Length: 374
Image (cartoon, rainbow, N blue to C red; front, side):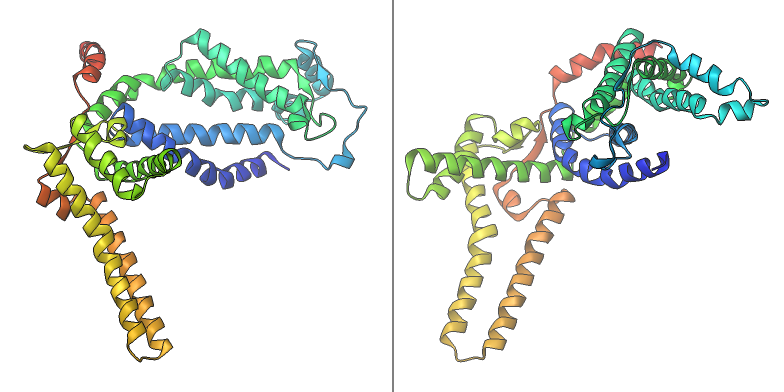
């Protein structure tokens, strides 16, 4: 398997891993900044893709278990052994191209190139100094070498690649090189502090995705609350009681914030009589999302059971109902994304307000002044 094939597998794997990472990433960004910066998304996701590529280059190709030589050496612990290998392999070559095309040479160059982006990411986005860049480059290389030494975490009975101390040094050199290469470009790029400040400014407004995230997070937390409440107290009408506590009682005590809203740094603002308006809002939400849609479905079932019509017509009617129900919920989710005021918020006079406040701004005020001065 060539290097390109390992990278191809990494690109095919990336969407799945990125999907698993996306929800925690969104929650973290809204909690810390109140917004999702596009440049930050590009940097973080490209870094994830880069790490996947490096990891797959370290473990692929995977051999058959039966083809592994159980007597082969597992470690090469002599520093700078690669220099003697290069001299032995290239001493008879007549041209520079012959030297560079030898595996003993291009493997060293490839290991350096492979870690240059790592050093660049560490300096630019993670704001690591040279000492930390050296440390993290060494640790990342050590992780890859241990992966090889353990036979892919003991999946294989014997290591199928050599643990090489030279790789630790060469990879670390690549990270150091990337650190200095980024120094040539860092002045032409927005700094991490500028990205953070821009994110805070954007987080002062509640975006559609932030509203939708709050909606989903609150539904999930409320569902967990329902399960816990029923498991402990075995109360009747646990759904209504849980909805009242979560969407009315708790926000009334916490300045219009549910648990999800608190984490995502936003709240529901009402002009007055917070408890009554939140209660009215919850009543409208239950009516809007549950009672009316499913009441229509129950009515249709009742009619079809008591009216003499064919089973095919019943199936068609119910299929149309399910389709319209799906469209109804999809339209409402789309309206949340587009930051439109839904009917229950309009009638209850509720408004979503960001709570990205002075405590966060103060943390970046000094940074912003330093940026302006420079």
